[in-house]
Structure formats: C-alpha cells, structure tokens
Amino acid sequence: MIVDIFLHPAIPVFIGSILIFFSKEKSNLISVAALLVSLYVLLFFSDHKDLIYTLSSSNLGNETHLSLHYYSYSKLGFLFCLVYLIIGILGKLFSMYRENYIEKSLVLIYIGSAISVIFSGDFLTFYIFWELMAIASTFIIWSSDTTESHSAGVRYLLIHLFGGIVLLIGIVGLLINTQDLTLRLLSHSDWYNWLILIGLLLNAGAPPLSSWIPDAYPEGSYSSTVFLSAYTTKTAVYALIVIFAGTEILIYVGLYMIFYGIIYALLENDIRRILAYSIVNQVGFMVVGIGIGTELSLNGSASHAFAHIIYKGLLLMAAGSVIYVTQKRKCTDVGGLYKMMPLTAVCAIIGALSISAFPLTSGFISKSMITDASYQQGLEFVWLMLLVGSAGVFLHAGIKFPWFVFFHKDKNIVAEDPPIYMRSAMVVSAFLCFAIGIFPNLLYELLPFKAAYAPYTYNHAISQTHLLLFSGLAFFVSLKYLERTLTITLDFDWFYRKGNVLIKFLITSSFCIIEFTKNKFTGLITYERFEKMENYLIKQSNISLMLTVVVIIFTLILIFNLS
Amino acid sequence: MKNFKFTTYLIFFVANFFLYIFYDFSKLHFMNDNSLGFYPLLGFLSCLALIIIAKTLSYFLKRKDTYYDR
Image 1 (cartoon, chains in turn blue, red):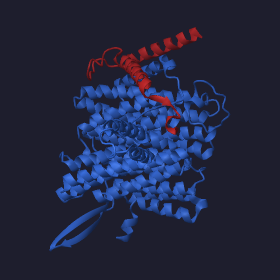
Image 2: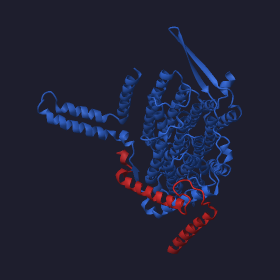
Image 3: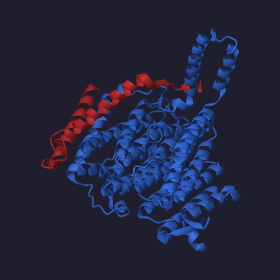
Image 4: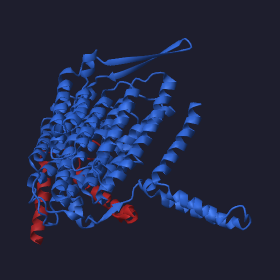
C-alpha cells in the first residue's frame, strides 16, 4: 500500500520541490530529475490499481462512508500527464539560467498539483489540488518580483479564489443532493452542476472574466510564463471533458472565447499579452469540441490541448528569449530581430505555423478533428465560425506575433540568440510540433476514444492552406491599420481595477440626492459626515471591495439554497 | 518596388490557383464549399471583417498604456 502511494506520478515532483530547499545550488538538476522520475512512473507504473481511501463517520447510529479516489487512472489522464511532463522538462531546460530557486520549487508544486488534479477520482481530492494549483501559480507570478507582478498576482488570486468558492459550493451541493462525490459526467441542470461548471469555466478563461489570463500570465518571469500557460487552463479543459462533455452551452462559450482572443490580440502591443489572448482563443476551440460532445470532437479537444501546450510553450519560449536578451516586451520597442536572433525567429515561426494549423504541423491534425466533428453533427453555423476562427488565429498569432517582433521595422537592437539550454528547449519543442504533425498516429494512439480520423486528404490540406494564406494576404493588405501603438485595451478587469471610479460616481450621485434633501432634514444629516464616509469608502482598496461583494453574494446563495 | 510587389502578388495567386489541380470538387461539406475560391474568399473576407471589428472597438476601448498606473 505504501509503495502504491509512491507510484503516483505527482509524488516525485512534490518530493523534488522539497529537495530544492535542501540543495539550492542543484535546483535545476533536482527539477529535471524529479520530472524524469515522474515520467518513468507514468510510463511504466501508471495503470496500477486505483488508490481509494474510505473515510467513515458515525452519527446517531447512521454510519456514512466517503470514498476518496486519491489516484484514478484514465487514458485521458495519461495523455494530459504526459504532455504536462514533456512541457515541464522543456520548460525547466529553458529556465536553467533563471536564478530563483523558490520559483523553481513553486513550479514543481504547480506541476505536481496539476497532475494530482487530473488523476483524482473524486471531487474533494480534485478540489484540494485545484486550489493548491491556484496558490502555487500565484506565488510563481509574484516570484517575478516586480510592482506589476505583485498587483497582477493579487488580482489573479482573487479571481481564482472566487472561482474556487463557486466550485466548492457546487461540490457541497452535489454531495448533499447525491451523496456521491465520484468524479463523473454531470448532465442534469441542477443549480450545483451550474456552479461547478462556472468554477471550471473560470479557470479555462471563459467570459466574462477571460481577462485574468492576459492580465496575470505576462507578468511572470521570462521563463515562468511557459509553465503558467500550460497547466491551469488545460486542467480546466480536462475537467470539462470528464464532467461536462456534450453540454451544448459550451459550444457558444467556446465560440465567444475564439473571437474574444482574436480581436483583443489584434489590438494588443505587449508581446506576451498577444500570446496570452491567443491562449483564450485556443482554449475556445477545445471548449467548442467539448460542447459538441462526440467521440471525435472530444478526441479533438484532448489532442488540441496536447498540441497546444507544446506550440504555445514554444511561442512563449521565443517571446521569453526576446525579453531575456533585449529586456523589451512591447511590439513598438522591437523589430527586425531575425538578423540578430535567427534561431529564435525560426522557432517562433514554427510555433506560429503550428498554432495556425498549417498542414504538417501539430495544430493541423488536432484542430481539424473539432471542425470535422461539427460538420458530422450538422452544425453548419459552428463549422463556419470555426473556419473563420482558424483564419483569425493565423492573423493574430501566426503572422502578427512573428512579423512585429522579428521583421517589420528594424529597430537596430543589439541582440543574439539566447544561451544553449534555452535554444535547445526551443529546438526540441519545434521538432515535436513537426513530429506530431507529420506522424499524427503518434498522438492519435494515445487518445481516449476510438474514433478513426484521417487528417491528410488533398481537399483538407488544400482548403486549409488556402484559408490561411488568404488570411495572411488580408493582414498585409491592411497592415497600415494594424500598426502598433503604446496603448492597452480595456477589458472586464476594468471593473475590479478601476472600480473606485464607479463607487465615486455612485457616492457623488447619492450625495447630490442627499444635498437636495438636506435642506429638509438639516441637523439630522451633515455634509461633513457624508464627506467622511465618501473618503473612507474611496480609500478602501479594490480588493476589499471585491471580497466584500463576493462574501455577500455567496452568503445569500448559501442562505437560499442550502437551508 | 512596385514591380516587386506586383510580382509577389502574382506568384501568390498563381501558386494558390495551381493547388486546385489536386482538389476534388465533387466533395461537399456545407454552403457550396466545393466551389472555386470558397476557402480563399472566406479566409480573406473574414479576416478583413475581424480587423474592421477590432479597429472599431479600439475607438472605444483603447487607452494609453499608463492608464492603470494613474
């Protein structure tokens, strides 16, 4: 039994995170070794029997049992764990020169908790590691140690705690109503199912709170963004596949995410924020696949998550290399870097081709499964929107990112390709993008469902090439309208970043009413009293405001639903 | 320079047109997608539409990058 516990792929990773504190100088070696041991456990011991613990309690003679599925093997879990470990190892290789051992340990905790989530077999274990993942990733953002990262980390934590509370209430509701916490497909539209869905979607970057991804991820260090991009959103995708496959509303949520990502990325100037918006966009494709809910579409979502983690890692490594070498992070500050950083430019282009789903790359063999599934289900509008979305991906991530960073106007920046470990991580990722694209069966054999699919037909390859090349033409035709400016684009985060403006407006307007009635009640209400209250409220930080609102809302929900 | 641009566009269109040699026009998904130029037009026009939408939204949503620092 004791041995079984150590056969969980997350255990070596957690042990590694502790060992780093005992040998700070060898943090890189420990990190890579921990992930390699975890990979070994996954490949050779992962399909051992499930680990189940039963908690018993006796209340007035009625004995109740609660089974905790600490480790529950599934083919889907294996697929996600494999890609988590691959990008973990590549990311660790890329971050060899980052001298922050605490960040390295936190990254291992983050990876370990993500693996634990995907191998958990009940909602309680799932929730515990889900929250651990949120906390570890917040500390990873903070370990960047800049003013921006501190405030972005706070906002990130608040959003995830909010999502966590929603999820927890849903899980409690599920337990009370069904007495069963096994992780399973939830199909009835009970209130607690909706809360669980909202909690999961929030981590996937669904509307209206999608802005936490471009707000927080780019504030991590040049290397930690690679890890941040891979785990939280994809774990949410995994959970949605397991718990909410075939929920129709997800199709429309996913479509919104696809176009939200494209439009905001087109307006963005920060290199990594462009890629962060494209995470929302790509997760949108996966969410649509989950919403369609057929075996082909679910395979498509799973394989797209696998491919996405690798090519997004590659793109963020290329962006991280530019930031590491030039210390610049905005499109307006860089340009013409292909002469100075040729290898980085080539790797970025390969990543860009993959995310755009060009034939022979990994994106092509995964995304097209979702598009074809919508066709097979007769969803004409969804099929058309997925095609338009595919063209839009090439527009914002396929061309815009490499064009403005590596080509366009030469800013005569003195730079060179990053050091050897960073280069090798990018080259291996680029190789994987092509390997999966050229030999799709390598990935298809790992997929959870048996659904035969042949991505390489003449018609499919030609139509996709036409679609993408002509969207590229649209980019160059309208290039002068896409010139970068030193601007940001307002998003939903305005409400919790500049919310005090709203409060001020409300207080001022209420003050006017009070001013009007003051004459009638002079003596009861004084101006000074309200001025004091106004100043007090405005001085309160947005955080306490949001927390108060959250607490009030959930107290009301609890009162009305659980009583 | 103008000649270079013209030649590039010409090569682009001719190369794309020649891809149709391998295309099977008898296979149909939805909306006459087996017709000549369906995917090129869809790619081009949808991207133009996305750019127009983004530009229009930018008039309302764009702020200086120091907006949140104030």
